[in-house]
Amino acid sequence: SAATAPLKFGINYGQIANNLPHPAQVSGLLRSLNVNRVKLYDADPAVLTAFAGTGVEFTISNGDLLNMSDARNARAWVAQNVQPFLPDTRITCVILGNEVLSGTDASAMQSLLPAMQAVHQALVDLGLDDQVNVSTSQSVNVLASSYPPSAGAFREDLAQYMRPLLDFLAELGSPFLINAYPFFAYKASPGSVSLPYVLFEPNPGAHDPGTNLTYDNMLYAQIDAVYAAMEAMGHKDIAVRISETGWPSAGDADEVGATVQNAATYNGNLMKRVAAGQGTPLRPDVPVDVLVFALFNENMKQGQASERNYGLFYPNGTSVYDLGFGGASFGPSSPTASGFSSSSKPTVSKKALHRSYLRLNASSTCKSIGTKTVPKRR
Image (cartoon, rainbow, N blue to C red; front, top):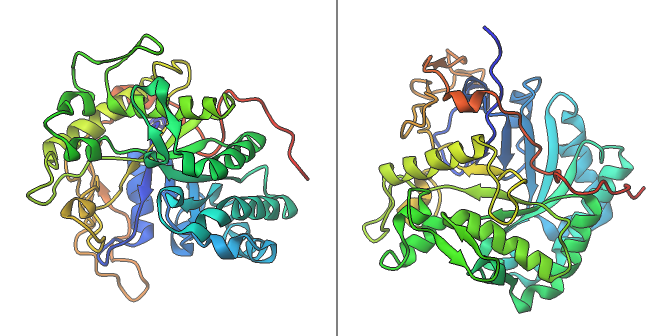
């Protein structure tokens, strides 16, 4: 049978759990689903090894900003965690720092750009910068205002970090990666936030008087608010990518909206739009690019119950809800002495992928589309 084209979305493979399948099984699952972009929250060598030769494109992460801002440490890290896996495992992006600018750690904020610069320079020195780019993922909470989208602006107290960060991303041709969860806005005020608006369901939409554009969903409004905030800092040359978005299938009693049905609706509708190559109202020609959170329910995540229920799959490989591309069954995840379960190849339901997914090509998480090519600094 002809090989099906890859899905247009990627997935976040978090591992804060004690019951997840072996990476070799996960590799089989993702190949059966045609998911070909994965983001890790570390540089787990077991995962990178298991995906060698699959063509799956990896974004790896490093949160050790203080250490990485030292050139020797950055080079040693790249030499140990990136170089040995190339080209067999397609590492294309290193993310430095996750949501540090909306946190409270001032030293991490100050180290963010130096760490990105040092890791990029290490990639240049080792001749890997043509294959691997650097970026950072931040929360939408770096915005002081996000509505209407045309009034999007970064927090004033973060301007000292955002300006040089955006200059660097533009120089590299890297996108700005944002973690955006309309679920949080709905959970915080279900009385005033429209559920159809956050779930990509039919609704009257929200009008932006600044641009005269109408938004039929919150995620696109958040993306365009980031574009507006960057433009206010003089940058129209950086793409916005969604490094995390998703919806929990369960939550605590006070977590309004955390249901299987809403999760299936959010992710299902989002995937249809991504598959159609849809852009936002402000950037209609730039297809929305997302990494869905998350691959598995992670049973050791801290916080409210929703935090442990973002997965598309249970750890045994069965899907939490039907998104039209089946699942796998690993049986009990008890590895044999070799570290693999007795059947390392999952049995995958033959349910056909949704037709509109099949003809699409993937895009690299960490390369900007439609921005000018920038000469590399050597």
